[in-house]
Length: 402
Image 1 (cartoon, rainbow, N blue to C red):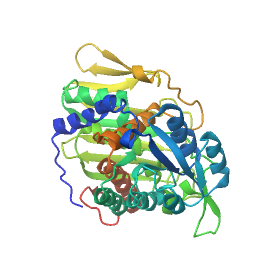
Image 2 (cartoon, one colour):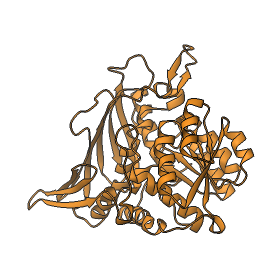
Image 3 (cartoon, helix red, strand yellow):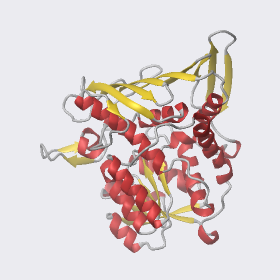
């Protein structure tokens, strides 16, 4: 699929800010088709499916109702059904789609390698789809998903929920307004701990052993697809242009008994001249300032400080006085929202993602985190993975086999 690498930065950013701002209106959507609630089916009721998506929808999205739940693991399905009284349970998503013709939408929260098949099946059944990130583990799969949405005239939203962050929205607006001059360089990192040990286990074809699905390339696609993808997607958004080439090195310095890497360093060149350095580890739990993004403009640096509840944007001019811009975590109409402590964060950005999804179904509101956003996000991570594996610089235009 050809791509135009040159994007006008101001139009790119203006559109992205408008997409987040549109949520302020979309949050007012009432009911579903013909004034009824949007009827949800959730495929995948593990940690993220149950403790984030299901929890948010049942508590904070009155415009929707969960009527069907599906998981191949009974230990995951049972507590999900207890949390959604009246919902029907299924162990086969195809059976769920066939048995629930009145479903309006399907939420796909399964291991990465299953995203494309479940999403396409739901779209072909006439359902709108919100699929967790990463959208897919290959670009060809993402294209198949986008084509199915277009052919069946259904909404496709990808779980790149950082696109609904008030903090990043404000940063995008400030960059567009020239608050740091022209953006020139990005220095960012994600230094975190290892994957959830209680994750679903898949039989490794090479060994025959039951293995955490995030340890295998076949099922996860890439460690950078599973995490790091949010940070890289936000950088792409803030830079306001497509990459031209991606170079990365990395490997398994600590977790040597798995396929997916435990560290990487990325160098990304963008078509507007901006360059980015991104560091990534998954063997560094609890390190101070393990997640950061520093944006260096021609006149000033922009970064963030504070906790989730009290974040602020800090602009440090190279000559002049430091400026602090507080950004609230919640909007006034989100005051009752409680984020989950421990485990999977039921984050407010995921709430906004669902509100926007419902609004796009009910009122044809524009989709911000659409299939194109999801495709570009996996493109960056997959190109970096290819560079790690081959030692080559990967041009953005090189899509074969990615």
